[in-house]
Image 1 (cartoon, chains in turn yellow, blue):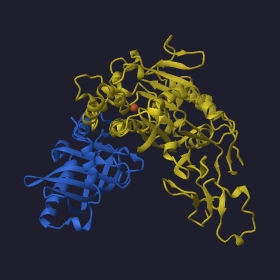
Image 2 (tube, helix red, strand yellow; image 1 turned 135 degrees about the horizontal axis):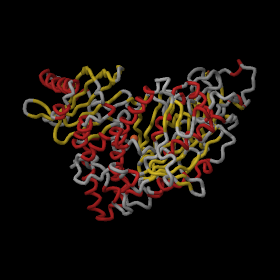
Image 3 (cartoon, chains in turn orange, red; image 1 turned 120 degrees about the horizontal axis):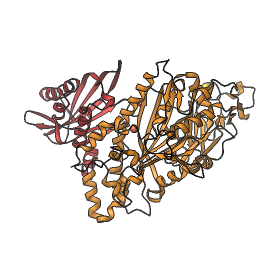
Image 4 (cartoon, each protein chain N blue to C red; image 1 turned 45 degrees about the vertical axis):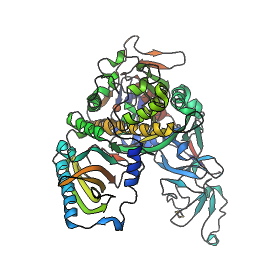
Length: 450
Length: 184
Ligand code: FES
Ligand SMILES: [Fe+2]
């Protein structure tokens, strides 16, 4: 079954997205938001969840694809699926738990029951129906394409999308680095910091690689971290004075994906990351415990409790920040949920017994710092932008930092663009990609045949 | 220097398991009144923005803990907040910088504490207190509420109490919270 979208453009997108600026209605018009929910959150690969959230057959989590309620699961045969959480009878959600394990879902309204493959298992008192319930139209709809890249599960309704691997393109490399820094490349999601703000989802996307805001928006966090330090080079302090002259950079991979790579600011040796980590609960005691056991060798484990200095953003909703997997969930044109999933390392043959437990005791605590002491200030600033954008005659949002300065931004033979850490080049590139998507007319389709 | 280690987590888990049982309830009116006293004082100091005075109610080795899910195990999942003393001092320091934009302007709050019950906690010098709270907050022209229940682990200090652990159980701890930057 295909869902056609009107081919008449909603707006003159070229007028609204210019080389150096974007129009305020991209953030304020409910009609733009509605169209984004199909042309973006539906038509490109959208991040749905991590495999560690559904490790066993029959495990599920409730999530969303844009605004569509979806049950992401591993079915009884082990296959990853994203079922629409929408009864084919009269539309009720069939699953009301946030997570769990189920071979089947029974709709609480009239009792239609569906296997976790999406297939209709049965309806109460079928002799009251003349139809053939074997007809696929009675199966739950499901996201037509679901793929996992090394544990990161995405879905799209667009048959024209390339494979997920192609979609990620060169952005898969920093994702590989991030995964592989953990022993055996294994991580598991361990709870989440869940925040919401009254603002458009793109305000968070605009911020994802923004090195310009750090010392201003996060000034209180920097001051809090540095209050304890004789050495003022902790945490995010490399943004002070002249961040554009630091070795860190911003890199854009196309399709709206980008990376802020702060790793070059940190010395390439075991223990260097741990040395710049802030003063989190458990810091001294667990370090002493690991040092007693491993001596200098403890450095390589302690680095795993430290925040990985990258911000990797996969369009449109996945942000890898430090050790967090942050997911943007648009709610309405001026409301967005941001979920910061924590990650922990996992025991295995390549890590001495007990180390994962000790490192995670630290790593859970290091991850709580930024959402509580940093992100809240960004979200407040996003809300204040949304308020500012109510000024109708003042139309433009500028994103031209770094533009037209010879030699500042480079493009390599693969089309990968690199610039200084505070440049807004990533915004310009992604919002132009966004514009192309908004001009497109994808034909979305769900699947009914499991 | 942090004092959080394996023993700290082990004790915390033991202290916060099955503590609200009927046979552990403390019914002595004087004791209940003194527990209510520190809870009411705490609420007033927070409403008045006297964060340093509020911090002085805590023991040297204390914990300020907001689980991220009902009963959330701090060794298995990240919390909304899990502050040892140093981090709690940092939390107040941040609010006092004047640059914590989520609290500029600062929230105005009005707290109601009720349904106070006290429970035995192993030895006479310590007790556990459960209370319900309703915080009404005004910020940015909007009024919002935070609701839930607190678990206080209190230690006797002179004629009164010091707070060893304050566990704040928001009813919406596992939902998306809008600006949870005020001191709960
Ligand atoms: S709506 Fe689901 S059974 Fe009727
Ligand atoms: Fe930020």
